Length: 81
Image (cartoon, rainbow, N blue to C red):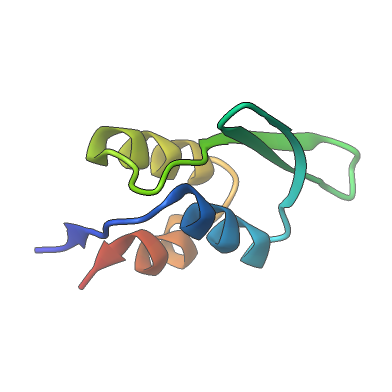
């Protein structure tokens, strides 16, 4: 059974950078990462910049990111095998 990794906000931002997202804005402890596709549509995610993200928060980020990135590519970064 796969187990969710313990990740920080910076870890998640690093993962998103691998998939073409860039940091566009930060307000307080929340960072917005976005990417623009060839058709002009924009995909945006908001990540809390905390030292350790709660499991529920991390699962929610994973679920949201999997709308934009193939789950098979994203899963190894968030779950242990």
